[in-house]
Length: 158
Image (cartoon, rainbow, N blue to C red; front, side, top):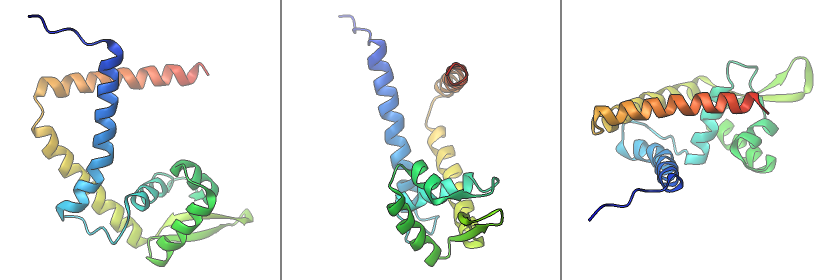
């Protein structure tokens, strides 16, 4: 009996669902594994810290920009930032060019926390990749390169 070949849409659905599951579970697995002191952060707060870190080289980001990145309302983002400021993770910095505008930035404690998370994430992914056959990792790398090129082309055409 021949195994039926999956339709392309089924392959992509399986791939994207699997990647989304990994994306959601990895941070929680790292926190539960113990090497990272989560500092009582929720996963959404951890996402918030990661986003602020990504914008750190810029001038920081505003509350409105953060809310957009997190896909939450500005009021929810403000509440989350208030908590993270109280925990010593963030600071609010007034824009010297426009005093009405406030940017969210990492503190030294926030930097320590994100560096610890990234280190734990790297270790976790290395352990995960050790369980994946080399030819499958190579195929995943090639597929990733294809997706990057496709996205670059697609974004340039819009």
